[in-house]
Image 1 (cartoon, rainbow, N blue to C red):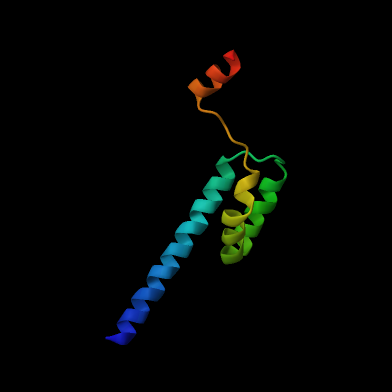
Image 2: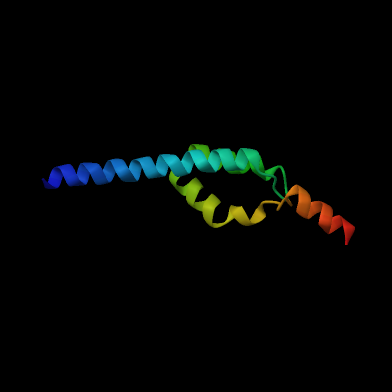
Length: 80
């Protein structure tokens, strides 16, 4: 019973890492950053060093994304 549990745990962790990896790549590709040239660097790091790249992206690089206003909030912001 124990080997099956360890295999299941390994598969679950592997799927979680792959899911975070795909999420990070898609999020980097769709987001705007303060320095647009960093997008290529972030993508390269996440693609070629998946585990470290994903952790760095989620922990540090999320702060560099440019916040975009939803359409109605942006219009109200301009009217003030």
